Length: 373
Ligand SMILES: *Cc1c(COP(=O)(O)O)cnc(C)c1O
Image (cartoon, rainbow, N blue to C red; front, side):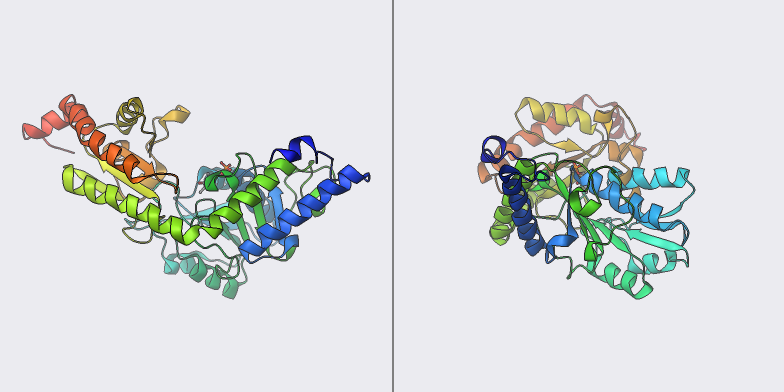
């Protein structure tokens, strides 16, 4: 990325030669990203994040189709970039169906079909869930959407660069991705739109991105995203095998060595690097802090970091109680993790869980036979 801050720093909208050089870079990288996704260059729109791509896909189609209908179908386990966008549209008068999921976090195609109405203008269903890792049958849902003539968007932020993502194979009309989820820079993403057909603009102004997304392009980040995606795709199979082996090691260790614990998400249709557990009788947040003191960076399912004490909407949607959802922690692995990392976690985790349970009134109540959890 560095030369694009210092040498090739022109504004791609300028007529002079350094501007034209910058323009060529964007065209080249757009074509490379398009090829990886099975798309055409004019179907690739750069955005400032995965969240922007999700917002644009959904608000754009909603605004452009207001006269045609006002019904949108999505799921109850989407990322907040989709969920909060849909809730915003509800306040604007749109109707949204939030499909339920089963205990593994899977959407049923029959439920999608049953939810379709004459006035349905968009279906948006994520490719894989960011908390529990469950992968949805996107190609089949896409087939259904196509047969009904309804535009279909998928949030593929968790899958792009990790498992194969091809817009033709997935039967999608729109797809969001974000660079920082595959080792690219933060603050850059893509919205793919079939035939360049996208709803209304989200950002108005200059003529960038085929007149559809104003704002001077972030060339270093575009180059960083494109390069990261190429590397991820080149090494995908090898990385997937390695990461999956490490993850399965964690899963079998935890299930075999720690009591009162459950694995959340689908046993097989899940992201290679995702392991999400509920540890009964303890708070996920306390577990995170104690792991952090040992240099282990994990995440909880709940959104306490954002100042809310509500448990994760995803964990509630798969049927967990508030208490169990609060005791949930997610371990995310990438190809940069090693067996040593996993061994270190295996050594630290049981002791931390034991310590926390020893001071937990819920756990002690359970031992006295007052278990209502
Ligand atoms: C991270 C993530 C997003 C948001 O992407 P940003 O680039 O961080 O805005 C959206 N959807 C899913 C599924 C994600 O995991």
